[in-house]
Amino acid sequence: MFSQFALHERLLKAVAALNFVEPTPVQAAAIPLALQGRDLRVTAKTGSGKTAAFVLPVLNRLVDLKQKRVEIRALVLLPTRELAQQTLKEIERFAQFTFIKAGMITGGEDFKEQAAMLRKVPDILVGTPGRMLEQLNAGNLKLEHVQVVILDEADRMLDMGFSEDVERLCGECPNREQTLLFSATTGGAGLRDMIGKVLKDPEHLMLNTVSQLNDGTRQQIITADHNQHKEQIVQWLLANETYQKAIIFTNTRVMADRIYGHLVAKDIKAFVLHGDKDQKDRKLAIERLKQGGAKVLVATDVAARGLDVDGLDLVINFDMPRSGDEYVHRIGRTGRAGNEGLAVSLICHGDWNLMSSIERYLKQSFERRVIKEVKGTYTGPKKVKASGKAAGVKKKKTDKKGDKKVVAKRKPTAKPKPNAPLASADGLAPLKRRKPAPAAE
Image 1 (tube, rainbow, N blue to C red):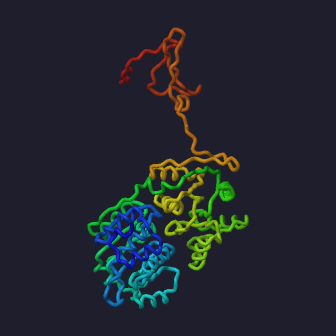
Image 2: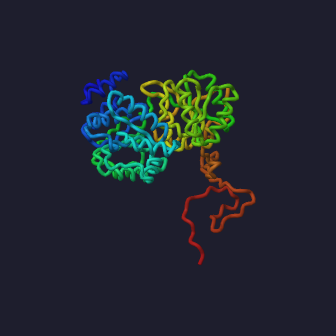
Image 3: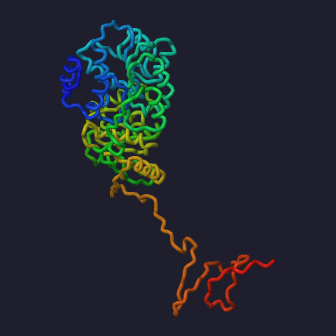
């Protein structure tokens, strides 16, 4: 029960109004420590309730502030606009019975309107690192009085090249008392380096091992001959799988647009989402998917983080992601909050090694699936069996008496090599093992 936490009564009222009853494992582990003021580094799978795990402690810190709202008190950094919008909504929901105000600044929105919002000084500022730095450099953003910094999806921010931006923004908060870092993957050396720079004696909470990050999702691969064959498989899956909503991931914007065009031509209600779309179109695509106006979303990895859609139970990787962490985030769009999901990856000959490396990273073996209606010829790399003949190995043969003969494999016209041992005159006498004679002076 959330009542076990030392939360303000106004926050407990909001929790009850939102029908939150039992805290998730990440909430049960992180909230008590965060309420104590500890720095945290938390790894937990997508859809596990990480947002509430940091929002509630931050609101609890600010709910009884006596000072007038003249400075920003908490900063939340995230990698994408979509995740920032989702987090802002969560903050507003949990703060509905308080006087705490939150604001958001991300790329793709009017710069001057954001500057005007900053002049009103929200208690909590949510945003992406790039636009925050732009407002900071323009003199519109003051962070000296920030008490808490939250880095959500920190691994993704590093992947997107925000490492220096994040470190600078943390440096602009010299009076911060607490830093909370959340991610869905363990990350690599870059993330460890950031933890060392921005966290002070952190508590490390590993809620899931990599192999457990998506235990509620069936993971399958289907081999394909080429991209046109992949498109046929996609259309078969959308026509025959049982699902409420689906997302198809590609590695390029061009391929996303191509697949979207094919789906629309087949009268499938779909939207496309990638970096070339302006903010208005991106919002529309996500809202239509959430409301059921579209059943399928075709997207690049811009949608792999922060997209939380009820009923999204099918993920298709048209292109394999380029890393194990990105794969985890993609398929994390399904199988959320304890629900089951299906993730299908389409594998051509050029995808096999990448797929195998992701299997090793996850310490899992994906289920191999064959659809007879759209079966191709490629089934994976051929296993080459080494044979004596293929390897050029000399074979031993036995004559009728059981004596062993050595038959050298050579071309009929081949010349003997220099210093090679001589055979007997008739070529039939068995060769005896002996040391070669010393070379002539």
